[in-house]
Every structure is written in structure tokens, then in C-alpha cells.
Length: 263
Image (cartoon, rainbow, N blue to C red):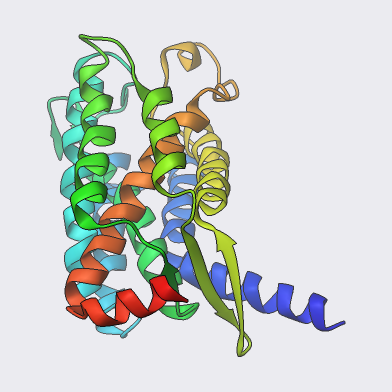
């Protein structure tokens, strides 16, 4: 019974952490079923995302520091969207006033929602990291993973090499979290895989409701290829590395990190 209770508590904390993504997907579904007046659907999505972000900060569900992280992810995601749409990886076929080079501005919030989840879960589950690699290793690795999303269009795709490098670098790293006053730990690499898999499920939901469209979904919706899990896995790793790095810089406590590494 205690294990079941802890599982329910963990699920509840995860659900609260996913508030922004849930609202995002619910809005996609609603605007698909019920056409809203005056503006195009993509424009309404931007307004909904902005209002949601304002409410979360206003209500105290997100801190101003977390808003800064989320804004950074919005810009990073929007830059990736502009490039990928230009290269024909996917498209946004619907009309909208707030589109830049074929990319609706709300699309950056899909990446920001991942950052929102990470920040919320980090605070709610009181996450700590054990044996976290030094920044001189983490920062170049995150940069290389992000740049590969661009470079592989012109050069070889090294995602599998980068994935192997992630396993090597984080082989001894653990994430510690708290549920109901009890501390648990999980291999960091496993947490990457789990988050990436659930984001792939979310991607299927998003494409079903027309958030964006892959070339093979032009005539009719079809399941997103499982190969996309690797892309989302790497994107999750980049997201986690950025959040973790900013958290550690914010703490400005090298001694605290060293204590965790000893533990």
C-alpha cells in the first residue's frame, strides 16, 4: 500500500509539473474542434500561451528565475524551428499573422513547455544531482548535441556518437528526488530515456491535433516514426543540461556539489 501511495504522490507531482504542456495540448485540441473568431488558429495559440505564462508567474506557480529559463528555451526552440521548417523537415500549413518565415511564434512555447516541466519537477521533487560532471564537459556536450540538429543536414549525423558520449559522461551520475518525505534515486541516463519517450507520445498527440506536420502526414495523420525518439531524447538531454547548469550556477556553491559527489 505504501508503494502504491508513493506512486500516486509521484504521479500527482508530475501532473502538476506538466501544467503548461497540458494546457498547450488542450488548447491545440480545442482550437482544432472549435474554430475561434477574428484570428487564425496559430495566432490564438500564441495568445493562449502568453496568457498562460503570465498567469503562472502571477500566481506563483513559476518564479521569475524559471521564467528566464523558459524564455531562453523559447528562443532556442524558435531558432531550431526556423531552420527545420526552412529545410523541409516539417511544416505549419495553416495561416496566421504571427508567423516568421513560415513558423508561428507559438511554436517556441512547445520547447518552453519542456523547460517549464523540468523547472517545476526540479522544485516539487527537490531534485539533486550526484556525481555531476564538470561544466567544462557538460557545456560543450550540450552545444554539440544542439548543433548536430543543424549540421546533420549538410554533414554526417553523429547523434548516435553523441548518445554514446552521453552514456560515458553520465554513467556514474544519479538524480535524487523526494516523494512524500522519502528520498529516491535513479540513473540519470534512465531519466533521459523516460522523458524522451513520453515527449514522443506528446508529439504524436500534437501532430494529431495539427500543431505541425511531417511530410508523411500531409495526406493523412500517421504515427510519428519511432526514430524520432532519439531526436527527442537528445533534445531532452540538452534541456536537462541547460537547466542543471543554470541551477548549479545559481547556487554558486561548489562545496555543496562536492559533498554530493562524495556521497
